[in-house]
Amino acid sequence: MRQRGVTHDRSEESPLAKARWFQSLSLEERLALFCEITELAIAQNPDLLKGNDARPVEGRIQVLSRT
Image 1 (tube, helix red, strand yellow):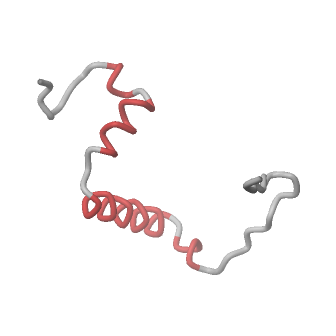
Image 2 (tube, one colour):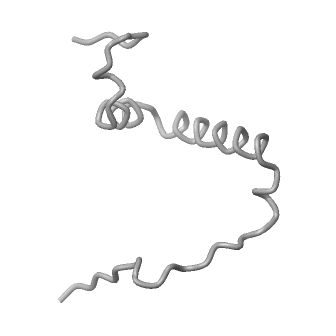
């Protein structure tokens, strides 16, 4: 059984390893991490709170439907 802790193995930095780590967190831990990352982003760039200027990119959304 693998123990949790600090490792210096490069294989632990793969996207799959990171996804496994994230999935091992409880819902509360995931939400707390999301909030911390959001607060960090806002601290570095307060303009993020100044509204939503995002625009849809044509051809980037695929609509799936059941037949």
